Amino acid sequence: MQGKIVKGIAGFYYVNIEGKGIFECSAKGAFRNDKIKPLVGDDVTMEVIDETGKTGNIIKILPRKSEMIRPACANVDGALIIFSVKTPDPNFNLLDRFLIYMESLNIPCDICFNKDDLADGGELDKIASDYSGSGCKVMFVSAKKKQGIDELIKYLDKKTTVVAGPSGVGKSSLINLLCNKDIMETGSISAKTERGRHTTRHTELLYIHENTYIMDTPGFTSLDVFGADTDTLMYYYKEFEPYREKCRFNTCVHINEPGCAVKEAVSEGRISKLRYENYSMLYNELKNVKKW
Image (cartoon, rainbow, N blue to C red; front, top):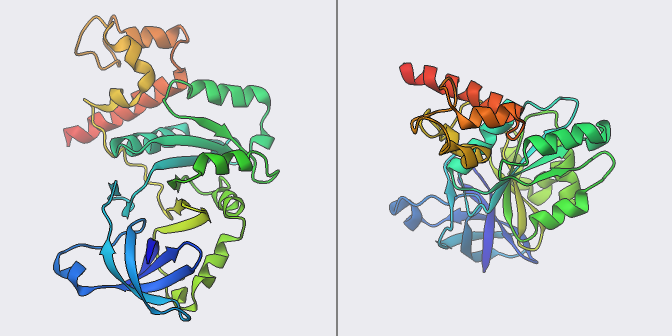
């Protein structure tokens, strides 16, 4: 049978088979001999040992279409970064770090702002405007009011999507609604998975509906600027593209140079001031790191 690895703990892999449920599997020794490690998100072929007890062996890992190192997972189609519009107020600098990291991995990334019921239309319009040039789709939902959930499920349809974001933004509440159950119940996949309850961190796929998964990534809130340096950071800001070649100097990094078309666009409101300030802060951070 063919299925997808949804979790791996202590040498066991939990494989979801459409219509049959979750099987606890071991990986055949050949994988270890070939130095191939199954990853969460892998599509696999498995043989059933005990259909009643839901156990089996993974006998083949199917070709991967993508692979992430951090978190370690395979076959991710996209990323959804979840922030709140209020309580807590969004940390846009952190948001940009998430976007840079995902783009550095060539993973399409979009943004979902929860708690839109706590903000007025002007505040939502400002956020949407600031990120309109980022190349990301910007969505607003309310887990508390259950608004925008159906549209979000349609967005996720037939994809495996990494979900990331800081604590307190309502990520767990949204995941509960998307999965149509309390995610704490995922412990009931098998009594054997109790061993993973106290594991410090693990990556897990959560099933929404046919061929549709979200990947919750505990602790995936690093502040490091992965994937960028002072030479490449500007390319992660898509709104700079129409102006970069208009700068006076072709080596312009859009910080202190005279005749900078990007800074001129910021001053004239054609590029978001918030996004430019984030860029400037990240650039100076990377510059200081490079000195060491």
